[in-house]
Amino acid sequence: MGISFFNVTFSYPSRSEQAILNVPEWQIHAGEHVLIQGPSGSGKTTFLKLIAGLLRPGTGAIKILGERIDKMSNSECDFFRARNIGYVFQNFNLIPYLNVIDNIRLAAKFANTAEDYNVDNEICNLLTTLNVEKNDWELSTRYLSYGQIQRVAIARAMINRPKIIIADEPTSSLDASNKKVFLDLLMSLVIKHKISLVLVSHDQSLSSYFGRVESFSDINIMKKNSQCL
Ligand SMILES: Nc1ncnc2c1ncn2[C@@H]1O[C@H](COP(=O)(O)OP(=O)(O)O)[C@@H](O)[C@H]1O
Ligand SMILES: [Mg+2]
Picture 1 (cartoon, protein in one colour):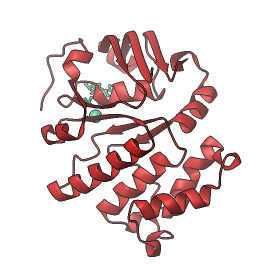
Picture 2 (cartoon, protein in one colour):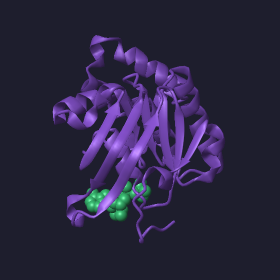
Picture 3 (cartoon, rainbow, N blue to C red):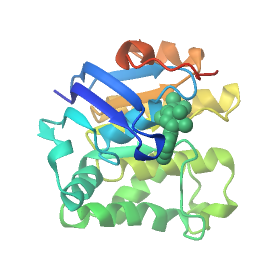
Picture 4 (cartoon, protein in one colour):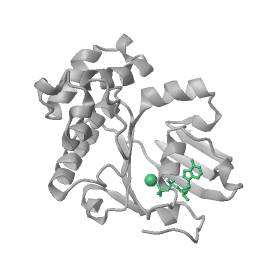
């Protein structure tokens, strides 16, 4: 099993314990690609952060690649995430004052992958596959175009050869043609490397790329009155 949730609830302490999530049961198999659609404010980002161990559930069990991520210490969890999970954030979260290569090297450093293979070769292969021009590799990421930033974010998510990639609305600010380029690249890499993909979005047009499409309201049974589109 790639990911499994069992009787998971979550609430932010600052919200007077009002529950945001209640996920009785949800699983994906290793290598599966799942698109989860749901409106803004329904808890999608919170759900992804629970998968990555960036948040801890109030109750229940979360297993990632057979391991109880909710039971790990913070440092175990950070290392496990760095090794196994690539995270593509909604606004990509590159470090603006580091260049392209150093943004990716930093992710590799957290996972200690240098012991396993040559990180710089891997970075070179990834950036070439993702069509990031060599002239831009030593440029601070603050100078990159939006399309380049996305491709560097994919490279960073891939550098530790993760078994799972989670992507939080990665296409929300892209026009139709950039969206297609981004998804074609991401899908070709996850298929080639047999990576599980969980991508959340409220964009209906992404469905054709995925074998499995789910509505977040079927996963999270906690209903809210204040959801908006
Ligand atoms: N750090 C936080 N502290 C308190 N409430 C939060 C925090 N982050 C998100 N929320 C609230 O949790 C709910 C779900 O948010 P989120 O998971 O970001 O939803 P989505 O990604 O579907 O838009 C929203 O009502 C949001 O305001
Ligand atoms: Mg969100």
